[in-house]
Image (cartoon, rainbow over the protein chains, first blue to last red):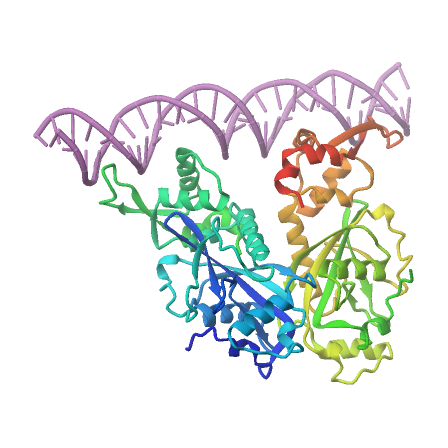
Length: 256
Length: 256
DNA sequence: AAACTATTGTATCAACTAGATACAATATTA
DNA sequence: TAATATTGTATCTAGTTGATACAATAGTTT
């Protein structure tokens, strides 16, 4: 499948899109102890935005979100969930929008459907950073991952708000869902997992208690030790065991 | 302000509605130890639905939801919050929809915009049942409040699903938000409050522990005793104290 | 190869929270 | 006046969390 982010994909009204509705994806990844989000840079500007798109007339919102994510970033089969709808009539500044288009030599008439008011459905994706070939499908230069606590200055439209709402949702569900493991690689140390939690919550946790809590959940499989990590005792590697998770009360009570 | 639920309000495409998007409201109330939801009965049928409507081109989703709630039920200034968007392309059966219209002598052409695919944004309202004049603004006969655990058999479209998702959201936020007090009258006994919690969670709680927990939150003001309740010790009345709640950590951490 | 260092896994103690039961207090009824 | 149903609170236990301590150990340094 072809992966592009070219504007023509978005501005062609011949495609049977639902009018007035879009989807924006907040794609979270975890790398080098930072919670990252994938932003796309508009050409010839310093303006970033969330990867988004429109909904075909015969697909569900979830399907559309999945397709948009795949098409614009190459990310497939990942954890994806709706978290909020943004419907402020002024959420997109049409002038800002036109300016971005013009900088890319896309000169749309001011009555073009793209400049109409759009409601946007926010989805967040939790991806395993190690499985993403960075930029492999992104043909817009300088798009990429940004530390959630160090975002670029100019983010288009209300996308900063959307992004922060996604982070808030992630925090709220951290203790109720096991979805957070979608952010980790196949195997990981307890320290790495703790670092993820600390980054999401933006606060330090006590190591001993975190370890006790995680192990008590009964959802982790302990593997071999991870050698070569430094001049100290080697940590165990763990794997998230979805079967154990299935059996645990946590999953039954709060599963997705 | 006039309050009607007449079909002409909804089917007139001259009104500047956003195309393809609707809002449906799940209105919760608490009465006689039951969690109730307000359903509207279509004329000349046994089919119930959630009160819903469309969004004007210049209003926000929250404003639209508030307006729809007021206009269709007479309920103003109540706690109202978005909880999910329903976007399955088959969520509304056009045949079912036409049938309902026909039974009310509204014969729309099959190409009418009302039969197009609509995405709907779910809002739930938490209202003080004692302040609602039942049916005062509802001029559709037999509309009314239904026990959430004893709903009518035929509920239109995907409205049963929407309703259950609203209940699920309510449960998830029960311990994180204080919004639940919007369902209680100005003053109430601890037993009544416990009954509300039990009804929402659909399980029994231990009285002594519930009382201890609630008092420890430091958000309730104890008033005089409530006399005449029966041949037993009179219970205290309590009032939800929003100032205390503001000061409590719970509110600061999880406020709306 | 012995000492050193940074980090890990676990234990432990105290503080806090929640589940379960008990019991005294009391407004009305009989 | 006694009986009864319900309330408010206490208490005991079990479980969870916060904080600290400490032994184990994989490299690194000497």
